[in-house]
Length: 114
Image 1 (cartoon, rainbow, N blue to C red):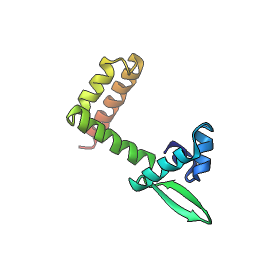
Image 2 (cartoon, helix red, strand yellow; image 1 turned 60 degrees about the vertical axis):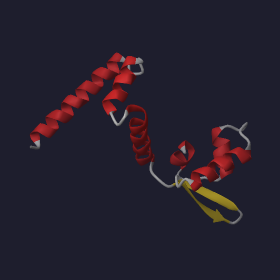
Image 3 (cartoon, rainbow, N blue to C red; image 1 turned 135 degrees about the vertical axis):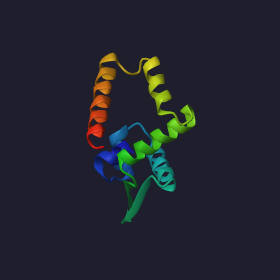
Image 4 (tube, rainbow, N blue to C red; image 1 turned 30 degrees about the vertical axis):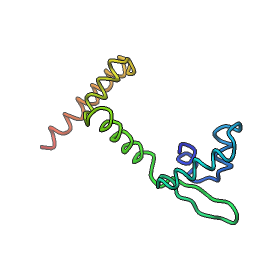
């Protein structure tokens, strides 16, 4: 998906070349076909070659995936996800400080709109 999001559209050969030449062409083609069946990728036949493109933007797919992660692993609690990231030291202290500043700005902006 990363290759398709970066390039917009690509053949399976282009995806293979961009990812890693050691990956078998058939492996890449199989993955693209699976993504196509799942509705994450669309393909168009041009001559004898399929051109693949993402069906959803990276942002929309990321939001859906995160929502699914939160629902499945954290019982729907985004707070529990964030707390796990903090407890497992996946978020550095300076990053946490920046996040706190952003939350404060968002709260100030929403207070002004009431």
